Length: 507
Picture 1: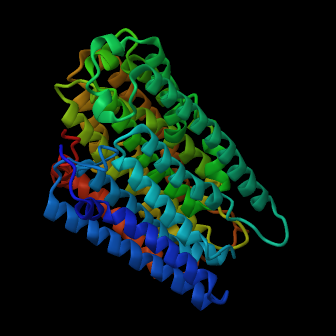
Picture 2: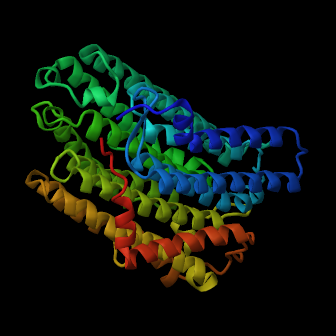
Picture 3: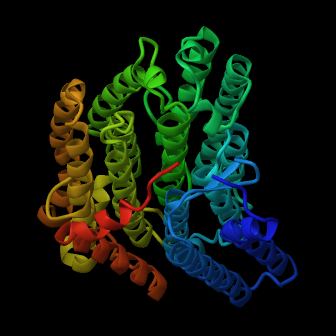
């Protein structure tokens, strides 16, 4: 890989520059306009225009420059098909969230102008994470992504304190404290890695010899990085923050966290372990990361699914479901450690993240849609009773999303798990993990179907007020697009698979 001219390098990272500049523009526009409903809508529309422009720029760069890996800024940034495709995934996730947000924010009277620029800054951080070619750049990206999310979790704020506001502030505080702790663990791990190897560049780490790979300092550094990144992906035992934060945050932000933030975290995991620490000694050795990740994946799938069984709150149920999906994705990461199927396994993870993003944002979008009024959010399973009769279209969309999360065909979620488990089969040592993944997927069907049963086979109480969500064209467009994507990929998975196959870290 060779470094390009400064102008060419800036062109390669132009989506990151554009989304950051647009965030500043939206922030300035919000600061210098009156706090009126029309002005707040204008800020939302301006955000949509910016994200659409970023997405078009990403598509143009992917088309014109191709997925071939290019080293930028002396190897500290790696722009390739993986970085560009993950950047598009983050942008699409933000676009859908912005489409779902206005009626929810308006209905609950929390439509503050800084909501949109914070989301844009977070997307910029995600793009930095996906393109990181060095451990410290990765940390900068993670913090740029995380700090706005901490603030967005506490969006519930009104003059009169309420239980919901207290839950939001508590969620934000927990997320911030534990996020700061995980960052400290990661940075200390990076310091140990640097002490053992003298470098933090992925391109240098992947070229380490066997004698360096066995250093105890390096092994401890890797373990600490697993802990720091394990918090971001919500893997057990680093998942404790997940249910409270998912429940306390505004529902559109919960969907954004569960999908885009998790995707960015897995982009970091892939960069660090399947590339930076991707040598045979570091992956398969006696102190290799594959064995530890396999144990974490198993515990994560078991605990995530079993805990979700007992949840009456739909947001908490999906939070533990998100924990379980982190376990499934770790199977793909572990499989990518095998050089024979590394490229295919990475593609399977990217495919899964695309399917999971649309499915999860869609599911939380339906939750936000039926709870847009200020009185209450309708987040308990009992609140969904009779929804199939009262709002058949939304009930059908939610059913499709839940079946996709469970991995039931013909949905995108089914093929996401299929490709993950298929690539893992190339490593006979992972057979037990695949069987466990299949068994826990069967368990997950039970708690997903509880919501479906409530919607179609349970009558709403007679004193239940009529469901009157705010009418919003944007939210309907987002939910329709998510539904069509989940069904379309389920019927024609090869199209997305061929596209995901271009997201290779080919160095």
